[in-house]
Amino acid sequence: MAEPRDLRPAADAIASIVEGVPTDSLTHPTPSTEYLVGDLLEHIDGLSTGLQAAARKQPVPESELRDGDADLLRPDWRERIPVQLADLARAWAPPSAWQGETVEGGVPLLASAAGMFVLDELVVHGWELARATGQPFDAPEDDVLALIDFLSSLPPMPEGERLFAPREPVPETAPAMDRLLGLTGRDPSWLGAARER
Image (tube, rainbow, N blue to C red; front, side):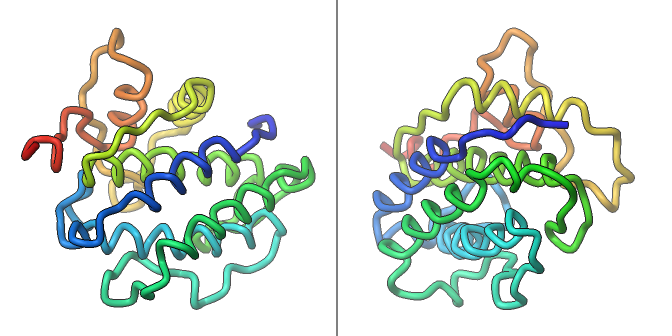
């Protein structure tokens, strides 16, 4: 069982990236092949509100179950998403949010595990959005290490039920963030916007 964690540093980090996204980058690729920048922003928009419900042991509103579609991204995203991310961190701040069971993504699970999956969303999508838009991203080291421990402890899942893409091979000696990205099926060497600068 994961210990309660303060999600504010990770939420603040991705909020800063959202605020710095250039408007003309919404059609740029991201490290997730199924997402362009606008799609990823719309996904973050949905999770930043929907995952608050998991902290409160409430069903996620149907309107917040979004896979990421730039066509559905509302024009006030730059101002609204950072506020929602702060609200998300506040929702997971009470120790009670991490206790008992909840439902996340339609799946019943321990609330402590749900909280760690929320942290994973914040850190990994923060890195993806930063890399896709040429911004620096520094995830809190203790969050990254906690996520490595958590994800490494999960039992193997059948191929059709995997939470992430197949793991990317990353050396044990690589930086912690690279090892986390490999665990979640991302290529830490993906350059995107940085390649063009």
